[in-house]
Length: 246
Image (cartoon, rainbow, N blue to C red; front, top):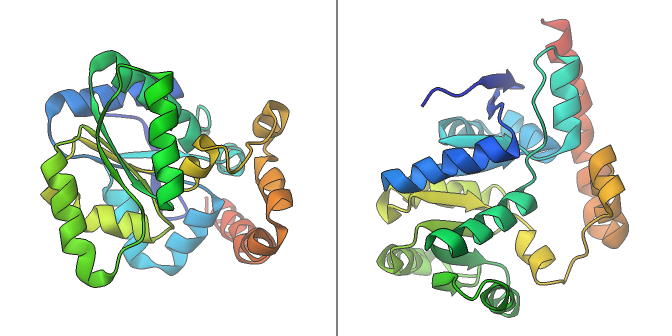
C-alpha cells in the first residue's frame, strides 16, 4: 500500500490522520504478517540524529506517526504539512476498542507489574469481549530476554503494546518482531501509566495547543527538566538547518 510520506530531520513520517492510521493497521492485522510501528516526537527526532541505529530502525518501520504538536508545526514551517498529530495514547485507546470489537488478541509488555496488571484489569472491565493473549512487566535481565521473546511468540497475539523506555523498545522490536510474527507491534512509552491512572493526562486544550509536554513537566519537574529544557532544545537547531537547506 502506497501511503503519503514526508522526510523530516532524517526520519520518515507517514502523513496520515488518526482514522487513516487505524485503517492501515486493520490491513496489517488482516495480512497476518509482522509490522512494526513507531511514533516520533521532538525527543525521538533528536535522539535519532545522534543514534544512526535508532534512525535506521525508525525508517524501516511499517508505520510511522507524528506524536507531538511541535513536529506537526515544524512540518508546516518546512513546507510539508502533516495532516494531524496521531498521539500514541489515543491510538492505543482506539486499537483496544477495535480489538474488543474484532476479536484481536492483545499482549501488554512493559512498566511495573502492578501497572501492567492494572491496565489489563481496567480494560477487561471496560471491554468485556477483549481477549488478552498475555502480559508481562518491562523488567528483565539480558540473559532473560530470549525467554521473554519466546513467551510473547507463543502467545500468538495480533497486537503487541510495548511500554518500555526509548530507544530500548525500538531496539527490542527491531531485533525480534520478525521472530515474534505479531501482525502489529507498537511502542507506547508512558501510555500504561496514563491508562492505569498513575499519570494524569493534560486537559484537552493543552493537548490541542501543543502544551501537553509542559503539563507532563509540571507533574515530574526533576525527571523531565533535562529532557525538555536541555536535550530537546537541539530540535530547534535541526529545524533551522533543514529550513535553510530547502
